[in-house]
Image (tube, rainbow, N blue to C red; front, side):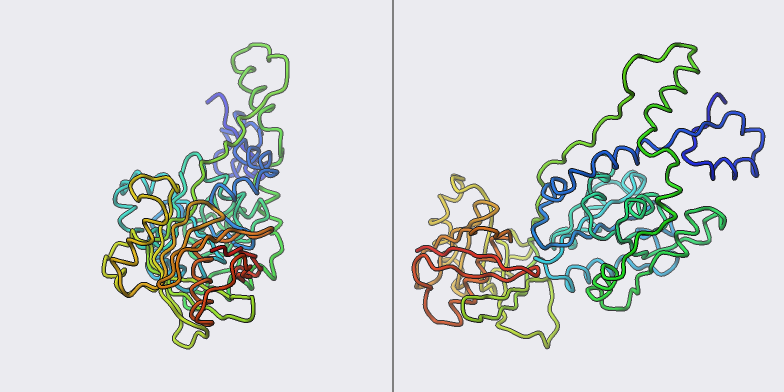
Length: 413
């Protein structure tokens, strides 16, 4: 062996204990993967935008390593994930939280992409995005507000970046008890799979203090791995190093991938003067307050959902010839679904065209500082119409309250 690259002297100490004859080949050269993340930190907001994370939303990244005891396996015998995924969609308001999943490449290769998508079908229709396990997982970590993970390297990287982590599977029996990863697993906060999720996430954010271990032991040479590795490689070849700095490939900006929610959403709304407080999720407790209605994407899996929908929406460019334009599409929806009160065509990240039964067509557009899902604006208008029994004045501004903020929305007839 010509070289065994290690990222921290702690690994060298353990190597001496288990295989002393390999020590002479050991090279301390940092961690290029982590260095790429450190270099990309200034672009966190761009990575969040690429995932469609809006102002005030929390991005929760669910992560699993590929071991059977990992979160996507049996979770160490607890098998947490099957019950956890629908609860994430039901308990977390869609406009307050964005969900994404990073699964180890071996999970994809072992089961196949088709099987993974089948298993996660309902979660995906409820807004979960599956992250590219090779090219985009680092960007997702940088964008995350919380990582809900296990004992895999990705969760450890998240903790090293200072991101709040919550362990849903620990795998302690698989780990060297003297390794930094084992110490991290013992110290990191644990998910209570039976407890309310929203309260656990809020408590995690409120008490979060970055753990010292992951940041210390991930690399002993932050930002220097490219230089150290190049020096080692050229020494092995007995060649002089090139002149100039050694550089790593920057993390690319992923494609724009906002959530597509085609699972029906239960909506609770409270109208208070010009303010409309909205909460949308895949399920609500029976004692939830406020006016209730059901909002359904036209591409819902079950066509029967459309027959009980109060609001039906879809998204697409305004000039899509398949629908004849927003005005024609909204008229067609109300004609085909007599129970529906309002149809909304979302034509951009900040606007939609809505048709309210008996009241005509309205244009909803985000005002200054507004940054919420236009489908939520449509539900807010529906709540306003239900409460007041008449349309707001032309040019009126609705104040849509979601994700802890107020989003002014101009309603024009």
